[in-house]
Image (cartoon, rainbow, N blue to C red; front, side):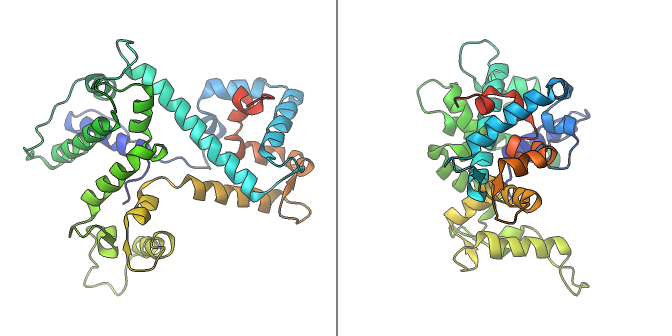
Length: 313
């Protein structure tokens, strides 16, 4: 219902195109913590690398990571230290992924990604829709709208006279939530989609979209109750019954902070043997497998990334 993380929207664009061209395809799903280890580590090659590490080397690298998470060097990992580390990990890998994508999209290797190159990488051809002409087919029109939004975001990410995007601009396009100059655009994009009465806010009704209760039903379905609870308790901070632009941002931008805090609390709940609400190195090593299949180590991937386990970050 919300705009959600960009991979989901990008996957939807691709799915709609594939439907329109009668090809088979799948939209990207959201990351979940219950995937198997191969999915979590990103592919069979990385799983093989994980297995190749000797227990001694795993132990050494894990201890190095624990030391880095312990920002005040008191020998314990607190909820805030774990949360900060996980958020840093999220951002690091998002930036690394964007840098890898940049190389793939830059077809002529000139150090910039043009709109045509973006289209060719995404859809194997250059797509150009008329901004002012709606399409009769509902699926094709949905794709046109999403494609035009991506083009608008692409243009907004561009900060110089060159119509193509350099690496920094490409990162702003792929991850606008990480770039200050894109925040206002993200808010305006969300308002255009959800603020139906044009008052600059999103009401609960607008938040729920096209939902209307079945006249024969005595109460709303479970998913609507969940969405209402999110609106009232997670997003509407000033309890005025509507989302202002800043509150709207917390809805449409992936809430990495909340995810990180939830994971940090989970680790402490599961691994804190002496109930002091913090983790010692000994407690972590006692539950090493749990720590290595958590966001704290990006499911073990950090043990293969010198950025995390090397003596100097």
